[in-house]
Length: 404
Ligand SMILES: [Zn+2]
Image (cartoon, rainbow, N blue to C red; front, side, top):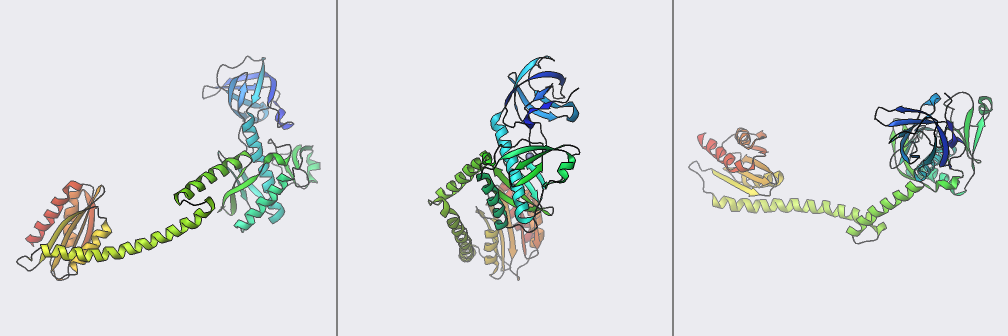
């Protein structure tokens, strides 16, 4: 069976075509693969995703490169008869998007070779952005942006992009950016005066069609630099998202978009300072609260004051502060509990001259709360999810203490 004639090789802007059905076959998915004598559909390959579109109005969801057997068009619906002539239509915006990303990659990759002798080792068109893996040893914001700037200059010079079909001998004399991945005759993509690369993808006619390239982020990955970029329509979409985000943040500060980072950074500093102040005020408040609690509790027959208290909306740290303030007084035992959102918290503590093993008391109490806890003989913390049992847990601790 003759391989499919690939119309996209010679004309990346051809989106409507007629072809004859050569073969149809059932796919595992229950859909049908249609093979044509010729096609303008680009199948998945070379880092570029498949085209989509229609065949006689039926949806083409994916195209697969079956090498010698040609291009398989996976369609939904009843397949056309073998031998029938069908009208194909490629989704133009998707094709244009892929051409912009793919041609953009040729340009950006060559920019890093030109500037830093750093070849590209991998390329992927993802849903939202694209990635290239570049042999760039010392990446920095300046280095990356120099590459981006050169690439955009090449785009705005609107250079001609042509396809040269050459033999392997001719190719050997050409300054190709990368080694051909196949033997025999080669399809070389030439960006006028800038780049020469063997490639089977679809490319813009002129660099201007790529529009612009922007780098979103980059990171070191496996000895290479992974650069996340967007070209053409994706660059505009990405700008819109980034602008929206920046403006949303700015509106929280009631400031202009570009002033937001400065204000946000100031707010983070202020927040740290406020946390510090809250902590020191909490310590003072704990001391006052401890004094008040102690006046309510008379010493028992052994001269020990056992303070029990359940507080609302206290976190573990605040509870611990209060316990520490209490046991700063002699002959004092603090058995404190708190309802902290959906959890019960406990802190048991005693002054050095008071009796009792807080660790043992805590373990017993936490079993009731369906939780865990422990610590030292003079200070233990714990908690559990059974908030209703909090009063009972403290009662058990009081009873265990009086048994000693
Ligand atoms: Zn290419």
